[in-house]
Length: 54
Length: 485
Image 1 (spheres, each protein chain N blue to C red):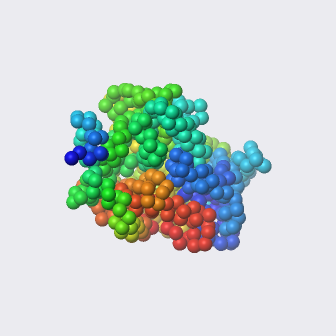
Image 2 (spheres, each protein chain N blue to C red; image 1 turned 120 degrees about the vertical axis):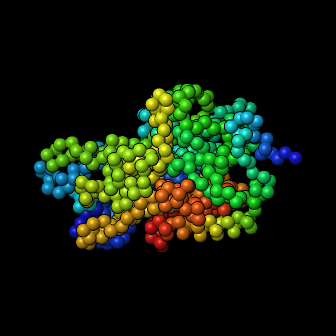
Image 3 (cartoon, rainbow over the protein chains, first blue to last red; image 1 turned 180 degrees about the vertical axis):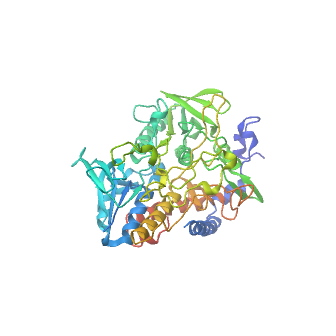
């Protein structure tokens, strides 16, 4: 079954040599529980980067 | 009593001014010279440019904020620096020209003990014929006013689409030597989102054009990110995102001329072409603001103080070495001018030693590559470090006491679309260090533990948090100094 986003890939055009996200990846981008976890992790990483930069 | 004069009140100048005054207290003077009466949180101009925010959401009056801390605020633009004074003035000074309604055009000399040049860039629309909103055919989001104007025109294009007219939208960089690809990147995806929200995405062709040799370069030579068990180039992720959203791209392009409805370009392979558009937002190249410098006898010493591009020379390596010989140590650490030790430059105003992305030329000799970004987090960090050094020097330290190099600092970049709590999305990126160090981190040039990128709601929440947090900090509201740059 072809997913919506795959329709944007055109054979032998510039879009042909890349990857496109699966429906699962797109779901996880919007999944509030998973994104809350990522929110915490990204914030921690950013704080570390900031502290290493001062 | 020492006097510190700061030219410019963008992210870097404002950070330097507020921390310097906080640390110096009332025993020393801090003077800020800036032609604008309002402070602008520039990253959020993108949302102004699509009509999701207004100018008042991203700006505030500077004077009341500076009055609160005791900073002497002069609404004026800097004209020249006189680091040795003059025959009539023993102390070093700057000449400024007032821009407020009350004192417009009035000239003034302000003496200083220490000077920070934080003037930011001149938006050099004149580098490309027909570029820019003032007499040109493209729009900009570089200032809040530019973004407001772009939003109004974009709305009119959306109305046309709703009436059944297809529209072509072109976004990117308007010259072969631009920086700030990230801002244009964020803008095109915001337009895409607004088109989708309005249910008219299929009636618009979105086209990207930039001077990056590959999509995802962002002026930092690209980034390698750990995802799905692989370490992969940002090129792959950027191309994936453009494909997912149905946005076409042209890279390695120097826009040579913009006419009504058409942009002409030359590519790195020497070929030329043109792209039709109904609306275009093209970032201009940046240059120094054109400050002059004079010696005690009135002799023009601009070349001593400034690099040819108009940015102020600091402690970087300006020997012009080729890409193969670049080193992390080329990048400035204390931002002190090598000739005049009481002059510093921060943010975009300091002259970078060389680009970060590999310099490239077309067969015709046209340079087409991104110039190095020095905005956002790095400019805030540099501003604070320089303020710290100057405060220590005022208190007796013989040399700058604080160092921070873009080759040793990280940056967090978030490109967010939409305003809804659950409907938005963002690309969140952390890069460490900003300037790749191929000796310390062979291969990718960066520490893969702290270089990451992902798409999702989380980054969107962070971007909104940062918008409110940095406006809070810039307005010196309670706890402002605890918020990191």
